[in-house]
Image 1 (cartoon, rainbow, N blue to C red):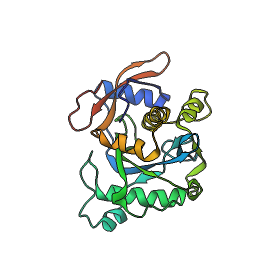
Image 2: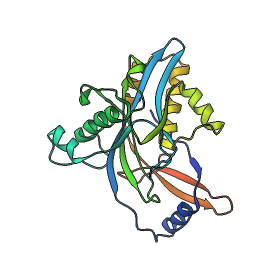
Image 3: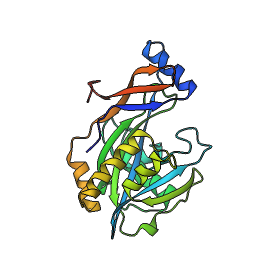
Image 4: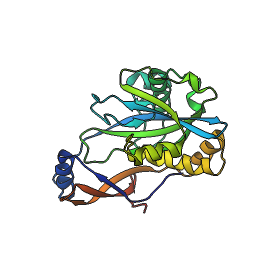
Amino acid sequence: MTDHESIKASLSEVLQQRTIAFIQGDLEVAPMRPAATVVMVTDTSDGLKVYLQMRARTMAFAAGMYVFPGGAVEEQDVVAAGADGFGDIGEDTLPARFAAVRETREESGFEILDPRSLSYIAHWVTPEVEPKRFDTRFYATVVDDPSQAMETSLETEGDQWVHPQEAIEQQSAGEIAMLPPTLSVVSGLARLDAQGFSASAAIADFASAPIIPLLPVPISLDRTDGLTEWDLVDLRTREGLR
């Protein structure tokens, strides 16, 4: 279950210039690294809560943004998975699942015992205008005891268990910032929470839909305010989804 609405976003001056070059066909697109992230959801007496961490402001990618725990797939994940490579771009892979487990443990202290138990719920690819790009699988798991997850990484500066709708309101108020993929998942959880879904039922609802590797592609740029409109396409086919 994923939002496919049009995305509009304000870009930095550097990304504006890269976007102009991309639209004109003059940008050398950076390669993608396989990556994985884990959406941790828990049940409370007044609905669902989701775990978010604020990335350190010193980070090269998504600095200061609230995200789910995760990171790039490393060679050690390929070895742990017993695979002979990182797997196909835009697909669910066992090395990505092992990376999801490792990164979640390193960044939050929460231990996922079986990578295969994770639910594959979404897949997003960093836009081609970005100088650093990831091919990211989104997995999800239920956390029965929220105290088992807490900030343990130097890559983060804060964390919170938060009701999905509250996180959306925090973003609207400028209190936190989430990237479109994070906001999309949180928005989906907010809708399901409003319908009374449990954490396990909400995750199952996400996982029941076809998972499409979503690539935001800039289609216009207003040079007066830096506001860019994006289309969402299937990475594999380049077909639009709006």
